[in-house]
Length: 448
Image 1 (cartoon, helix red, strand yellow):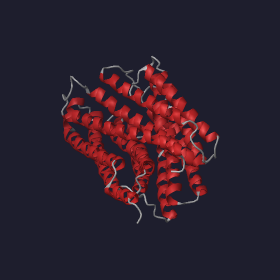
Image 2 (cartoon, rainbow, N blue to C red):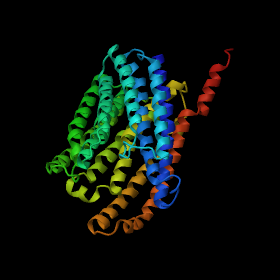
Image 3 (tube, rainbow, N blue to C red):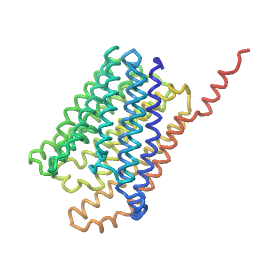
């Protein structure tokens, strides 16, 4: 760790990991309700469990992005963070707002819009927190060296904040509501979040492979260009059946198909950088997470997204378990794994625990990833049955749900595996391993 103010990233990484555990735990609980529909029906209804599951995901991913920015920007800018005090204040405000929102959901206080359920005052607080964050980060970049990695990261984070402003626009007309609702939800995860993901991966490749910055930055420009070119008009695949003009079916189908390109470029990028670097970085776990991120993102966001993105296919699959399969694998591959990659790389440095128990971390990687992959396959099979029997043959919704119960049981089992993997990952990062303890003990022994 080169700069002392990078330590503020520790707050965000630890907070993100705690919320990560909450997110997967409530996800497993939601999976249990699919198997036992009356579970907690009177005390914690399914809609509240789902709200906590999805909102915890969004909050901890954003918290991870903030921590990544506070860690990598000082190294890229070659200067200390503009105001460590503001960074710490922002963290506690963000954490407090997130906790207040979750408590509110439990007691029925929410806005009702999917993924944007936050009450108005929470939305205003989020804007305030983001302004503090972006001011602090931008001032840090402006006073130091400007690199492609830091500039693209800052642009992506600014776009996250600006696009969130559409969350305040809630027209009475349902078509207009959904048109602009997707400007937050889609343009975040299939647009500007990809810029953040690409810049974090580029930083990791520079640090861990030793490849010249110029080569990494050329790849970064290519990936970002593809992401924006395909992601912006790819929003059209959400406009197929909501009352928007018919030309969106063509625009959505064409550009959504092309959305596979930036994710495939990320696979080529990460594997080529690791191969070209030729040096074995001591943090094998961080390299594994970075490589895994590009592969899982390609399959989750790219391949599984493509499976049902064409208008004529989406007519039958939209809103079925096929969508759930795509969503789980895409979020895990693209954003959960990139956060865990930068946390696995940076946290041992921040805690002074190098070397640390990487073997346990890598076990967590394989257990968690296997659980998500198995969950994706079970939900895909369930979605295919649902699309055919319910949407094509016209059987009643609840009758079809009964036919999919076996897959819901498998999904619950895979969800529990994900929870186990998540706890192993967090334990490996936050608790010193025997190797670290032995090294620290040796360092403290007086020289003879």
